[in-house]
Length: 452
Image 1 (cartoon, rainbow, N blue to C red):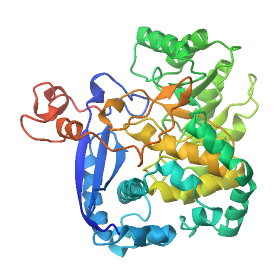
Image 2: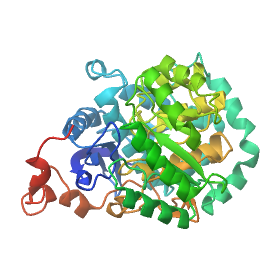
Image 3: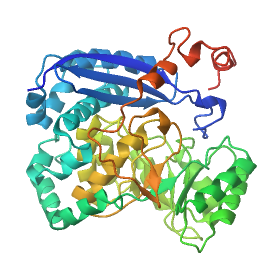
């Protein structure tokens, strides 16, 4: 029996604004950050979870974790995991904390960190990676992990069990594929950040092609002529007829009419989809954009969103409205593994592929598990998963790509355990003599003009 005894939080920030890693039309200069949660027990095991932010405000999420985590202190892990759906409902039911949600915003970001830390802890005690825990579940056990409140008009527990049973037949073979790192094809955004120079864009695209990538994503939305120039460079590098696929991402910068007009001007570059064309809360707007771009003179352009969608309810509505070509759930913006499992089932019900959001520190470490679960357990179909080749060196078990596929994690846990020395080095505001944020170099960010 493992009992949870205490927890701690860390505010960890990496100065990515210095080289414009992560830059896009909406987010000019983010510092990739983690609001980090460690759950301690009376055993040798500790659970690690985090939520990704881009700098300022990370301390607010860390403070919210400190309000939520006491709900599990003193609990037996077996008690929490015996009925996961009930546990998840318990964690979102503190009425005073719920008032500042409910099930969205900062309090939900904090929930994602706590829930994911519990899954990491559970996986370590079972000596399995998180994806394998779910792969070894029966359909009934999988469904018991989910709180179906608010989504039974789209999918019921009974329907979910039936959907999972439909793909049970080939599951053992898909597990073998996963163990051989042949379950999750990768795509790259590493060349596509908006702040990169033309020379850097060309060099990174050339490198990505040489590494065997087949899917490439570029940021757009600041200037249409600049977008056309950059997409022309991309197409020159990856071709139109070499089996390579181009995607573009506007990070919510447009209104609905702007999105339609802008993408019609980029249609000749034949992108598979436009990601986050408008507000993540605008269900009908996404549906209108998708309909308008279905028949451009250069072929259809799909619509993708999800990294800023707050919960399973928003995803339910996007799917019901026929607004999505691709669904891009985030591992920690929604309420952790349990809510992602609900979203995977909704996507399966509506026949929309899952391509989780992975553009941030720790996110590829998380999402490699989620995409593996989708392929092995839920959809039975391979999709693709974003791989951003930054900051992996700070994790005990970093994600990686080989021969165009994610290397499937086999170590126990959820893969986001950060090295203690990295947490100390990039702690914010941190200790004098330990943290980078106390150095002269950091003053460029801390005392320079505030970039919004």
